[in-house]
Structures are given as C-alpha cells and as structure tokens.
Length: 210
Ligand SMILES: C[S@@+](CC[C@H](N)C(=O)[O-])C[C@H]1O[C@@H](n2cnc3c(N)ncnc32)[C@H](O)[C@@H]1O
Image 1 (cartoon, helix red, strand yellow):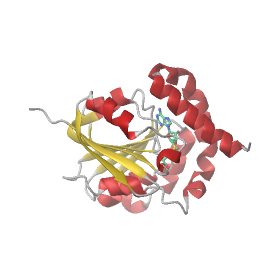
Image 2: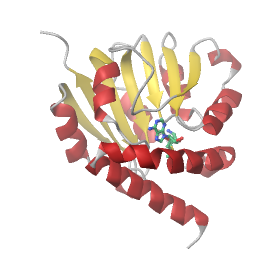
Image 3: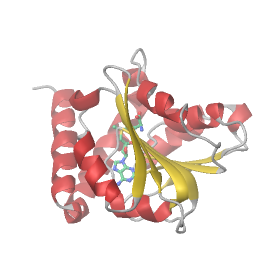
Image 4: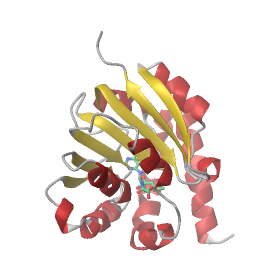
C-alpha cells in the first residue's frame, strides 16, 4: 500500500472515530496535523484537474443575502475561502486550519485583489478562537465537522455548508443523515442536499431567534 492510500485510509478512520466520540480528537489531533503539514506543498497539485470545489460552489450559489463575515474551516491551501470571496465581493473571509504549513501555503496563494478581505488563521475547529455567532456563513470542504463549535460560531440565521468533493468516496466523509440529525438538534433548519456528481454538499441555516 503506498503512502497516499495509507493517508486516505487514516483520514477516513480518524473521521469515523471523531464522529463516534469527539473526545478522541485529543489523540488524533497531532497525527492529523502532521499528515496535512506534510501534504501542504503538494496539496494544490493533488487537487488540480478535479472538480474539487464544485459542490461547495453550488451551495454558495444558494446563499442569500450575501454574508458579512464567512469562515472556511479546514481551509487547507485556501481554495474554498477564495471561492467565497469571489462569489461575494463585500464579504470578509477567514480561512482556518490546524496545519501551519497549509496556512502558509494559503497565504502564498492569496491573490492581491483579495488580500484586504481574506485572513488565514492557524486554529483548531474543535475549539475555535472566535466569539459566539461571529459568522453568517461557515463552510467546510472535506473537513471533519465539530458540531458544537459550528453551532456556537454560526450567527442566528447564518448559513452552513458541509461539502465533500468526491461524495461518499471522499476520505473525510460524513453521511447526510448523520449531518442532518446532529445539526437539527443544534437548531439548524432549511436543509438542502446538493449533488454535483461525484461531489455532494449539505446546506443548512441556523434558526433565527423567534
Ligand atoms: C482534506 S483537507 C481539505 C482542505 C480544503 N478544505 C480542500 O477541500 O481542499 C482537510 C483539512 O482540514 C484540516 N483540519 C483537519 N482537522 C482540523 C481541525 N480540527 N481544525 C482545523 N483544521 C483541521 C487539515 O489540516 C486539512 O488542511
């Protein structure tokens, strides 16, 4: 088995373990960070030629009104953060990732015309350094969801996108039924499932106050 296949299997195993018990993240954090730090220099070439952000972008098209502040979690080298900023010319975007090497590459990739609206932070999605209700849009592309933090940082009425480039074949993947049940009990509503074959995305909205 080559290193890439092993890495994909480990990402799937880690996702399943965290979905079973989020506390296991405390032991998985280091190896996951190590894995993605190592992949950072090659990540863009691994992604090129794929319709990597198609489901995420299809979900973005349904988001209205345009968000004031958006967070792309597990941003990697920043592709989905750039998609948000291109889709919404007045939105301030934060891209966050636990792997410092990914964030360094994202900063190198940042085009000049987006520089004043996008910031990249090293941060852990299981314990985010942002205030409650900070973002009107939170997006995840091929990223393990930490549901309590998603609920906390999403503003009332704010949007959530959880996208997987290769649908159920994506190494980091959570089935829509599971996403929906976790999000419903945390007050998310207006669910839509989007398919861009092979990509899939779930769009939801945090219920606004009555
Ligand atoms: C499969 S990559 C996806 C990168 C990018 N979103 C994309 O679609 O190309 C997963 C990314 O999530 C990051 N990640 C994993 N767990 C994280 C966590 N708890 N907090 C922040 N980032 C995390 C990894 O470092 C990696 O960059």
